[in-house]
Image (cartoon, rainbow, N blue to C red; front, side, top):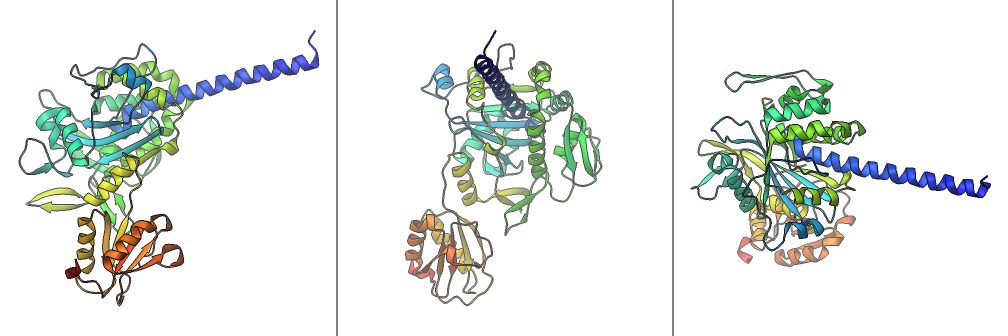
Length: 434
C-alpha cells in the first residue's frame, strides 16, 4: 500500500503527463491550424505545408530551393520565406488573370507571419513587357513564375515560392470545415451570368457555407471596388480586400478549433485537387515545426498602400512608393524604419510637397503630405519622437528648423502621433537653399 507521500507523488506525475499531453495536443492543433489557414487563406488560398506522412500535395517539377542550401539544411536552419498566393478562376487552356494576390512572408526564427494583400489593379512593370500594366495580368502572360518575378521586382524582395488555389476547391474546403461565421456588413447582390458568378447575401452574423464564403470574399460592387482609400488622414481602406482580411480572422478562429483535427484527412485529399505549388515537402515540414508556437498576435495583415487613379484611360491602384518601402521594411525585412509626415504650415502653395521631395531625395521616406491645421508658422518645426531624435536632428539641420520633443506637444498640427517625425514647413523654408 502506498504512503500518502507516494500517492501525492504519483498524482503529481499523472498531472504532469496530462499537462504535457494537453500541450502536445495544443501544439499539434496549432500546426494543423496554420496549415489549413495558409492553404485556404481569404478564400483564394495561400501558402500551405504539411506535417506527418501521408499528406501529399502536387508540386511543380521545376521547383527550386534558394541557392547554396540543401533542403535538409533549410529544414534544420529555417530562413525567412516569401510565398505568393494566387487565387484564380481557372478555365481549360486559359491561365487566367489572378483575382486575388497575397504575399505571405514567414519568419520562422521570430515566429512571425505577415500577410500583405496586393490589389489586382496595382500599377506595375511586368518583366519582359513594355510600359505599365495591372498586376493581375502577370499570371496571364507567364503563369506563376512571371507573377512571382513581377512581385519580387516591384517590392524588392525575393519571392521563391507560390501557391495557387482555384475557386471550386475553396468552396469545398470551407464546406469540409463546416462553414465560417461572419458578420456580413451589408446587402450583397450581384449577378454575372457570363462568368457564372451569383452573389446573394443579407446583412447580419451568420455561418457562410463554401459558396457564400466565396461570394463574400469576391463581392466588389459596393462602390469601393477591390480597394479604396476612404480616410487619407488615418490611412484607412475599404473594399473587398478589407473584407477578405476580416474573413481571414474568422478563418483563423475556425481552423484553431479542436474539431478541425478530425477533418484533416478529408481536407488533405481536397487540397490535392485544388492546390498547386512549388513548395518542397521539406520546406512545408520546416515551416510547420518552426511555427508550432505561433499565436494570432504574431500574424499581421496589411494592404499595399496607395490610391485609385485613372491613367491613360486605365483604372489602376497606384502604390505609394515610400509607404510601400516602409511597410516592406517593417513586415518583411523586420526593420523599423522612420515614418515621416510633412505639413504645410506656411500657407505657400506647394511648400509641403517641395519639402517632401527634398527629404525623399535624401533617402527619407515621407508617408503623408498635407496642410497643417493652421498657417502662419514663421519657422519650420520638426516634432520628433524621442527614440528617433537622431533622425529628427538631421532633418532639422536640413531645414534650419526648430526641433521639438513630441511628448511636449499636447495637440500636434494634425492631431495624432503615429508618425516618428512631423515636419511643419514654415515661412523660412526656401527650396533654393538646397
